Image (tube, rainbow, N blue to C red):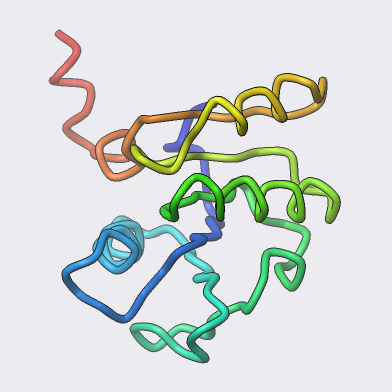
Length: 131
């Protein structure tokens, strides 16, 4: 899964709090040109963007769903997202668990990334770090 090919990213756990990664990641991805759709049942708007209350409300053309929530929330939302037809998931460090891994590995039609930071992986200087 090459995150630089993503265009439309849903962010589960987006928040208005500028000190939390749910806000830092949102602003970072937007600054890199990605279309980001925040998901959080607590808000109507974050950083000027409409917020989706659940992954089930997302449009079908999402390239990946990024999770920046505790693992128990990520598992619940992953199941909802899978049932809604989504097949590509990204778990920020701290959002993944063995239970999520077991669920995803039991499915044969999903792609996922665990414990890699989407901000690092989408950085234009990333290639220089691998020399």
